[in-house]
Image 1 (cartoon, rainbow, N blue to C red):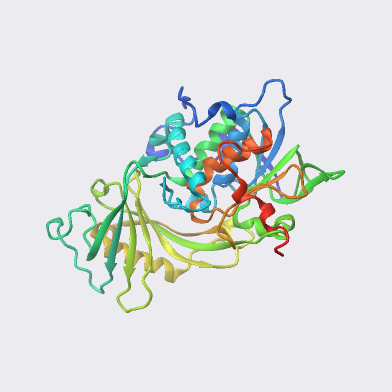
Image 2 (image 1 turned 135 degrees about the vertical axis):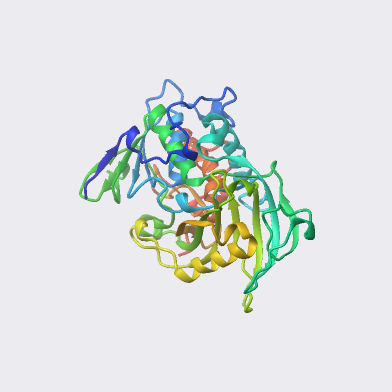
Length: 419
């Protein structure tokens, strides 16, 4: 395999919203990030060399915050930054939807960090950050859906949602829900990390973690190349199962989720309302729960149809199932006349969400392996919880503990003795 160090100008970044490339003109907000003072390395300490494995949102956020703390960071990615779920997810953010469980503090902290990052990186222009209203809507599918005018429906629904909808209610406001374009967000962050904080991106397949006399010494890539480091962070998403030091302690499996991206003919008619659907198929069967996210690009993202499947070795080989894709197109046409007919289909895709058996992410230092850290298993909340996970990991690696989020619920040590 040919290994390449990716230069700042060759990150294969997407030009956001057909605007001039913004990646050279970021400005740091004076307000900084949450607890920004805690995210700076002491000047009298030698910089720690850290290898972060995985170019998804978790790995990129970790690399970004580590570099901001003064670490010398190398990010290793097998294929391309944000090539899997971090490039094909919905990018929905919620302040309080994880309240009442172990993710509550992580999610709330991360929601606020997203807002701070948007101010710092001009997120509204560079990766589509915006607050939005979120609705819960029920639909019953019809073979010939009748689209109605706004006057004949409830006032909660925006005018473009003109399908045969039933009850609807507001479940999120611009104060509590928001969105980003996940691929643009992830690639904007790695570009900033490379250009302003010296992060090096290496394209290559991780083979194993390197141990020198029982101490972490970096990683070995396929072909024999060694990337040296004082610490290693494994942010491999659903590919965590392929690394024995992780799979021997806990299970991470892949939940395959499908999505389509549509470009309505009248894109200006689509308002910033995220829809969480209760969808009843016309020919019976269990109701489904698809989700609809309009984007500032003028595109509309729809996702759903999830099932556990075996994760292929190469993320570029992930393909959607035709039946699931066709079902999402039927959902789109039922929900809105703007999403059927003349709407252009920009993408038909699938990705694997990394899940754990106890439905809680794994974030922390591997037991018995000082200097080896893991961050995975974020399921459908990876984009939301990326910033707080990355900031907490940076503190853990550099300072020995996390103050921004209590990581006790997420420690991999909780699996010791279970297998």
